[in-house]
Every structure is written in C-alpha cells, then in structure tokens.
Length: 159
Image 1 (cartoon, one colour):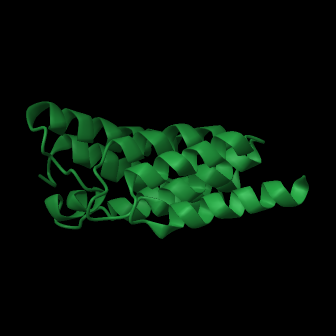
Image 2 (cartoon, helix red, strand yellow):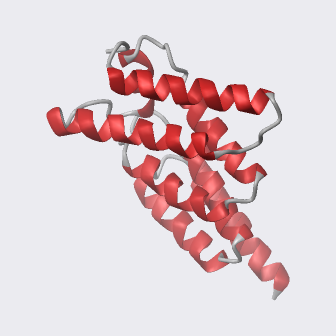
C-alpha cells in the first residue's frame, strides 16, 4: 500500500511541508494540501472498503509506519494554531474526528485543539456544547468532562 500513488502524493507533500518549516516558513498551502490528500486517501479507500482504517493509528500499520501520519496530523494542527487559523482548526478538526471511530484511541489531542480554537474565536457557548458532544461520543475520556468543567468554571468567574 505504501507504493500507492495516493500515498506517494501525501508523502511528497508532507516532505515539502517539513522542509519549508525547517527554512522558517511556519505555514503554507502545502500543509492544507497534505491534510486534504490524507483525507482524500481515506475516503477513496473507504469507497472500496468501508472498514478501512477505522482508527487513526490503523493508518500507521497499513502503511508500515512509513509516514508518521499521527505526527503529521498533530503538527498540522499545531501549525494552524501558530498562525491563528482557528476556523480551519475547527473545520478540519471535525473532519478528522468524524473520519474515525475513536474506540481504541482517544481523539482528545484534536478535540482540545478545537475547543481552544472555539474559545479564541469567542465562541464559548459553542465550546461548551462541543464538550457535551465529546462526552457523549467518548464517555470514558475524562478530558471532555474536565474541559467542560474548566469552561463552565471560567464562565462563572466572569459573571
């Protein structure tokens, strides 16, 4: 699977992104392109096999750990944060979260970024509602409840 042209495109884009980052370019279009290429591969593979990579970590195994996919995804969201692109964090955070089941792995690393982005956008009510949905989706993840409590405590202190 690692020789698949779809994966090769993803690999080329991510290599370009990291090279640009080493040269001081914090965020450029290649990060969005790489993320979109990853999402395209997932959707194309799922069109043929609905059970394809139901967990984010499955992608690592299916590609023989060649691409550090989890690391790339987290780096992408970190770079969006660095440039203050909070709306894209929310949009693409939802895309990646809805793409996987999150039964084996936790989505908290991404969901926390979405909550923080909502707060930066001045959408505290949306952030609390997001935590409520997160608690329903992953009731065993204490990060959801703790984040919601912190948001509500912060709201009470403001009032």
